[in-house]
Length: 206
Image 1 (cartoon, rainbow, N blue to C red):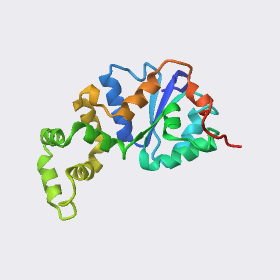
Image 2: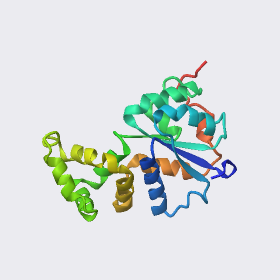
Image 3: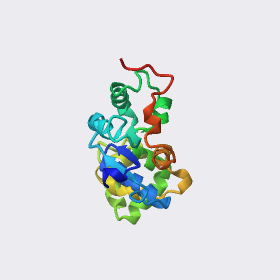
């Protein structure tokens, strides 16, 4: 999408997260390209500062949203602090800016929302339940909970299954961070309004 047509950008850590955001948008009846919304995979949290510089107030100044993994939150706080959005950002401040945390990552959020039984039905429909059973029997995984087993099994399959799970979920069971990050990107209002002013509760960077 040409920068001139951009209204909003959703930053995500990787391509599986981007695919899930696009899948939810499609289920909600949105054409992201037509609505000027771009979903950008950063290639990891380490690249956040570069993308904030490009799309944030000091760059293109578009409305910015971000979906990130909770264990990496400190890196996003640091990047925002370096850009002048406060030294003491709390989770609520991040959400005010359009940044939503997945606990522990989006795949965990999605599999938890669908539930183990429905996940096994989905694996069976994809012809991979037998492979999952074999994975469960491996010594390294026998004592794990099924939730941890599913996380490990789907790790190299998350691009495919993220979309499949989004499509399988009832819309009222979509994980909150995924739902909210898309809503923030699609919301009306001036581009990047939430990023022009640091949260009142936070200190500023000198």
